[in-house]
Image (tube, rainbow, N blue to C red; front, side, top):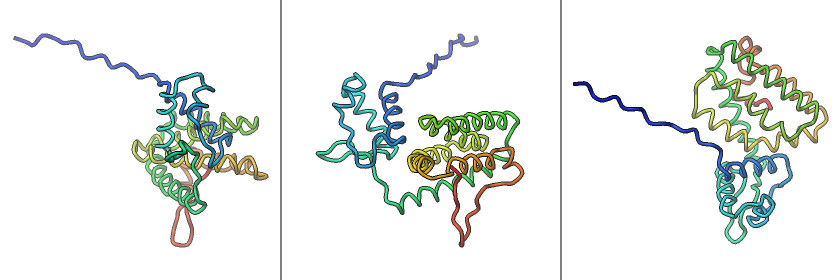
Length: 217
């Protein structure tokens, strides 16, 4: 006698929670320089500004702490982190090493759909540069980077790179805003790093004992 058919369990997609929404907003404000290194993030003030209770604010701050953007200090609360210059260099070196590795794995698996998606995001990013839409730079820049690497199917590596991208994003934005010609240089780097170019030219940087890997912006 066959077993009675059972309906499979329903898997519901989790919508973004209030703490995650708050964390996204605060993250963007840190990355665009509204909150600077060393600035305190006062729970009561944030809760009042967003018209929420302090509980989701506390959860949002924990998420930001996990990403390294803030540190929780005893008797001081949440403080926007300050990264020493030598550690900033280390973060960029780690990004370059991992990005070269994952890109090398992605290129053999690239499809026409990957190329079309990557080019579409690049067009949006360049448009944001031209409009000087600073608030869009970080998200679009990461989406472009992600589009280059997604074909590698290396979930853990991609997650680590995303974390490094969050840590370095604020310094890249400052460079783009304050340095003459930086936006034009970034556009050129992104065009040269597009998948259609990389399928022919390979990784943009190859570190050896004499030179350090340099990630594009």
